[in-house]
Structure formats: C-alpha cells, structure tokens
Amino acid sequence: MKGPLTVDLALHDFGAAEPAILRIVSLWQDIDWFEPPTQPSAIGHAHLLGHQHLGHRHAPEHFAARIDVEHRHGGWPEFVALCHRVRQPGAFDWKLGPLKSLLGAHDRRCQFSLSAAAPRYLREGVEFDYRHLLIMPCNGSFVWGYLCPTLDLERLGDAVAESARFYLSYAQGDALDAIQWQLAEPGSPVDSNPFLPLLHGYASGYYPFALSETQFVLFHFTPPSTPVCETP
Amino acid sequence: MPQPHDEVPPAEIRRCFALSRRDQAIVSLARCKLLGGRPDFAQALHALSEAVAERIPAGRIFYLGQTEHGPIVGSLISGVGIVQGEQAIELVQALRERPLRRLGRLCP
Image 1 (cartoon, chains in turn yellow, purple):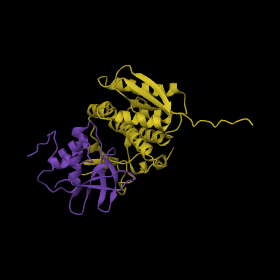
Image 2: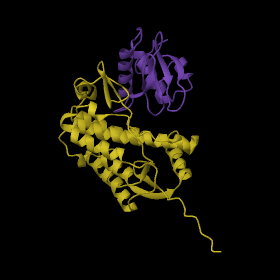
Image 3: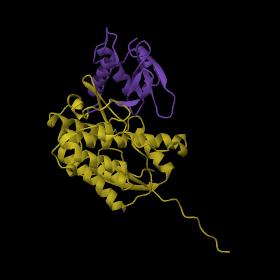
Image 4: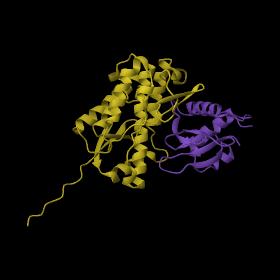
C-alpha cells in the first residue's frame, strides 16, 4: 500500500542536513506498507540488529548489547493482535521510552534546540501553510507536519484500520526522529543515524514490535494463499 | 492553587474521558502554565509545547487539521489538541476520518 505525502520539502531549507533528509524522506515515501516482504527474513533481522547496535553505541543504558528476536508471520488478525499486545496498559513503551530518550540525549549532546532552529528551516518567501510544511515555527514554539502517506485504510474495516493507523503513526515517529537526528548533527553520515535501519526494515516488509528492552517480535505479512486448482 | 508539577490533574480534566492519563497530565501542566491568563493561540501552543517537553523526552506536537478559526495542533496518537475557538482556546479531539470532538475550553 502506497500513497502520496502532503508535506512539500521544497518549502524548506535544511542547509547542510538537506541531502540526508531528502534521502530519509525518499526512503520513507517508497515504503509499500503492510505488504509481504521484498527481502529474505535475514535482511529484516539485520536491519533491526543494525538499529539496536547503533542505539547501543549512543545510549547503552537504554539499548541492550544483545536482543532476542522472534520471527512471526501472518495476516491482519495476527498483526492486530500484536498491536493490541504492545498497547496494553503497562506494556513496554518502546517508542516513547528508549527511542525518545536516545533522540533527546542526542539533542542535548549536540546542544540542539528545534524550537530555536525551526524558523531558519523555512525557505525565504514561502507562504506559511500548515498543511504542507514539515516543521512550522510559531512564536518560539514549533509544530510538526503530518508525514504519513495518505493510504486507503478504511477499506480494511474499522478494527484493522485503527491498528494500521496506530502502527503507521509510531513508524512516522521513527522517520521524524531520523530527520531530527540529522538536523541536530548536520555533518554526520546518514548511515550512522540509528533510526535509519528501522525505515529500511519497514521498506523490506518487516515490522518490529518491542515487548521489552531485550525481546522483540519481527512480523511480516504472508502473501495471500494461492487458490488450489482442482483437477477435473 | 495547582502547582506546575502536580501529578493529579484537576477534576474537570479527569472527568474528560477522552483523555488518557498522559494527556491529562500534559493538559493539566499546560493549564498551570497559563494560570490567570486568557491566552491567545501562540501562548497556548507555547504552554502546551513546554508541557509536552516536560512530560515526554523529545515529545512532539503535530498539525492535526484545520477549522475556520485556525489550525488544530496536538497529539498524533490520541488526537487531543487545541484550536482557536470563537471566544477562547478549545480542547478538542481530532482523529482522522472522524468528526471533530469538542472537549471544552483549555482554560475555563
């Protein structure tokens, strides 16, 4: 499933970080969501380990040196069940826990404030339009634009669409984290960005769910079963 | 008088059943920062931004949509946010593909 983005990066000037950000957004835009993998499971596994390795290098207190990865596959019922599992009250909060801590610590290490920097990311003469901007400065504050692709999730039914939207929203957080990482450290090579392997993982059709700091499920969708042809 | 770091939000926020505990804490903190004032949208956004930053490391506020009075900004996950109303800043829930739900004024 693919769809267009409403954000228009041409309205921004990200300076030295621009090539890296264009690469991140291009990768994000090309993801074919909720489809069977395009790569063998070893590739999806390697992307998750790559992310964990970079996270451990930057924030060993939040990212274990070794993790257990259980591979699972199935259709929407299995995917929705995993979404429900990680959303239960008291469940491990990967995205708002270790991932946010990693980004926050990097901002502090780089002495970077997005609130302070946001006004200079608007290209000169651009008409201020909330619908198409990625980062909108506003009197010392700022607001993020919506980077999720426009997908026809409604056709999946309410329950499935709700879980798909949940997953997509959190995955979008990874893309924005990757962008913010480059803004904080414009000269750093994008391949050392710990959020980039997560986007590569989605692009290859593997969807991580963190059950704890060391336990992960890596899910992929199975292709629809081929109808069996009966011999006359 | 509520203090900026009160863990328990005021009763009228706790009764607002659309809010998760995290949203309750953030809205409560934003209100404390605005106490005694009648904020404009920029002031309300600033208070909300500070509250999010204090409650969630590297937390974010998103553009959620538009009304005739201006942009709706808030949490992408819960859809809870603020918008300029006819007379004051309103608390709303804006989830995609659903009608806007009004939850009352940000500052009563």
